[in-house]
Length: 277
Ligand SMILES: C[S@@+](CC[C@H](N)C(=O)[O-])C[C@H]1O[C@@H](n2cnc3c(N)ncnc32)[C@H](O)[C@@H]1O
Image 1: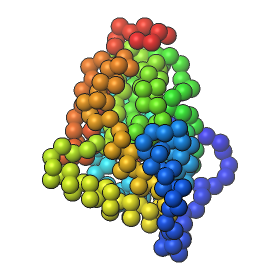
Image 2: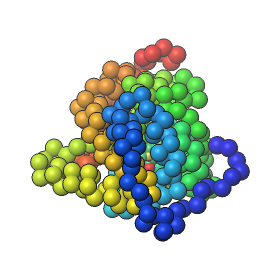
Image 3: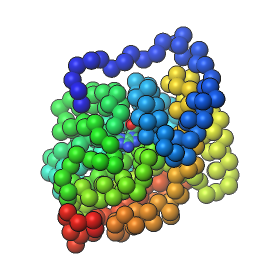
Image 4: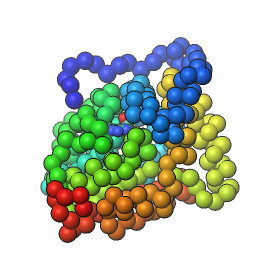
């Protein structure tokens, strides 16, 4: 993370009330990015850089605080207790909530790398670093600056859906894990029960884009979000993609009526470090 330079100041209320609607080009770019087109990487990096100063506030408001509970559930599955002094990866770390929570666990004596390719997100989380064994790293999830087989565990919360090439990212984390170490993926999913799905759809596609747009001042970030969830593989399919990338013992749990899901996979204990599997 580069030093110096201050985090951009939050927008004024005047600016917030004057969010202009997205142009056709902006709306099309966001929708293409959510569908996984070539523009995705650049769009996602720019969009998170833009909303970084308001990201934490928006998370708490839009999820009504449930996001904290989801992250706790996911962290409990990383298995850090088996290697409390190991190096762990918080992938797509954003403002470092997960890294901070892991490093604060009683008995944790290891190190957390918080990797994200949007530097303003890491900067917005700087206050959470104080006195903690966390190193923020500006890095792409498809090309991590860590040695083969060096991580005692990895976790990604609400990040992997945004990565341009999901399979490349799954393989890259697998490469970096020690044999026997786990990768935990916390991500939004689509509820299966029709009534819950209808309420969720109304909130996600109509309420959330309005509040998100108003508070963040960003024209497309909160239309991109529900569309990117819609285009992300459903739980069973994600588990298959994890297995295809080399993970063993892949399991998942649905959270809060299926609004989110937590997948866990293990790099097989017998896998060859330096080789693919
Ligand atoms: C929705 S935020 C999640 C942040 C954090 N994990 C949390 O739980 O709040 C998604 C993050 O993923 C990052 N991201 C998306 N694609 C990435 C990539 N290819 N490499 C690294 N970071 C990426 C974004 O910059 C953003 O900070």
